[in-house]
Amino acid sequence: MTAGNDPGVLSDEDLLRELGSLYDTRLDALRHAADQAYAEHTRRTNQLEAEYLRRRPGREIDPARLREGARAR
Image (cartoon, rainbow, N blue to C red; front, side, top):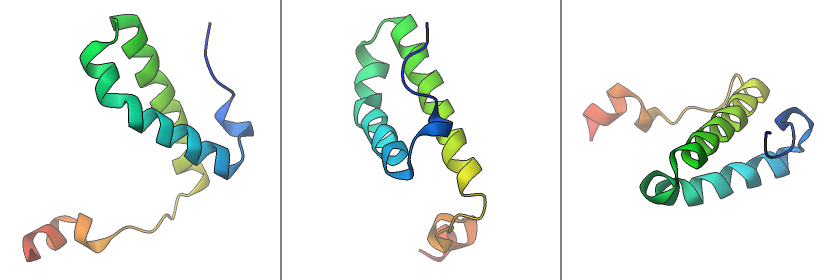
């Protein structure tokens, strides 16, 4: 059994909301969830992130997040 809607049918707003919800619960899942629940959390996160990247292959990259930007700090 899989949980959640197919990411491909989610609106952009719903996709971002789902990702935000998963990010909000990630540390708790890592620290306290059963192995199976943590694996499902990871699977769903990967699924939603892959859909985000599919929709935004040319997403804006913050130069400060690149190696050169980190060195400049």
